[in-house]
Structures are given as C-alpha cells and as structure tokens.
Length: 261
Image: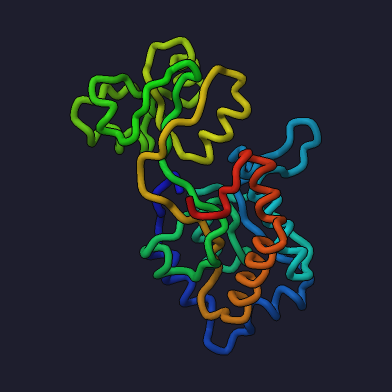
C-alpha cells in the first residue's frame, strides 16, 4: 500500500513457470501439509513486528493471518521476508500467501490472484487536538505547512498541490513532534498509520480528513488455485460476519478498517 511493486514482470514469469496446469490446488497442498505458509516482513508495526517483550510476532496482519489459518483448519507458519523480495518469493513457491498490507492493483493482478479485501485505507491528515481548522481536501492547505515522510507517496501527493509548503522529514516521529508544537500545520500519512499514531504517540494530536482515494489491501497467492481462493474468501466472509475481523481491527486501530469507508 505504501510502496511500489518491484520486479513484477519477473514475478509473473516465475509464477507461470512454477505452477503447471496439472498442479494440485493450493488448498489440497496446504491441507496435506497441515500448515499455511504465510509471508510477512515482521518489521512493520502495527501490522507485523516482533513484540519487544516476548520476541513473538504480533500485529494486525499477524492476528488476521492466524484467524484465517484457524478457519481453514491449518496451523500458521510465518516466513519473515524483506519487502523487496516478498512478491518474487510468492511467485517461486516459497510460501502460500502474503499477509502484509499488499495493495490490490491491476499490475499485481496480472501476476497473482487476490482474496477479497480485508483492509481499506486512504491518505489522511493529522492535526493538533486544539486546532479547529477543517481541511476537507488538500487544496485547503494552500499556504499551510504540511509534514510528510521523505520519499513517501504522501510527499509526492502533497507536492502536486501548488501553494502547499511541504516539509519532508526522515520519519513520523520527527514530524509528529513538530506538529504537536506548531511548527507545521498538518501532517499526511496513511489512515491506518494515522489511527495507530494517534493511539500510541501520546501527543495532543487528532485524525483529520481523508484526502485521497480508497486503497484496498488483499492476500495474494499464485494463480490457478480456484478452490483455495473460494476457501480463503469464505473464511474472510465468515470472519466479517461473526465480528472477529472487526474485533481485530478495533484492537489495533480503534476503528473497523476491514470495511470500505
């Protein structure tokens, strides 16, 4: 969701090379093995990371992956993988799925099949709690100072609007501090991260308006696995219907990000 696709052409070729027409459906393969191999970074809080106290994997994606594996009757087997290699690893069969906030887009769908979305996200503003100004769209911030992560898609987005004084920072901690003390007027990040930052930063900040298109995150897997796709979509639908997916979402974000806004 926050990064561009790397080596998609190579991944697509690998996917075609590693999945002959006669191959067993992924659902049968995983059930014969008894485990669901799940790739994630393990370094991307609040989505997936190692708990500093226990050393165990934790996060929104981890909880979702465990829930889905349980509904499929499988044991989750996590495979920590750097983002730069994660799609190619899926194409080559190193794991069954990726649960790591992978955005669904046409280029990725050329290489992989996706589950139905399990997370929805949009660019969102951060403001000081005491700031009552309403910025409904980015153009409302003309003449204002907006903090963004250096090299991020949000930096690019803010720079497309003439008149915004874009201030780039190494990371969120730096611009959050400047926002809290009034050196900038707003900050721009992903809505999921905004919810997390408001919840955990302990700074007098609040979520502002959502100012971009909705992004859908899904679970990719190799093509030509119709039984697996049906099973994972059914598991997600059941998790939505019984409230377990919403409960995980609210645990991490104090909001239900599993439904389209």
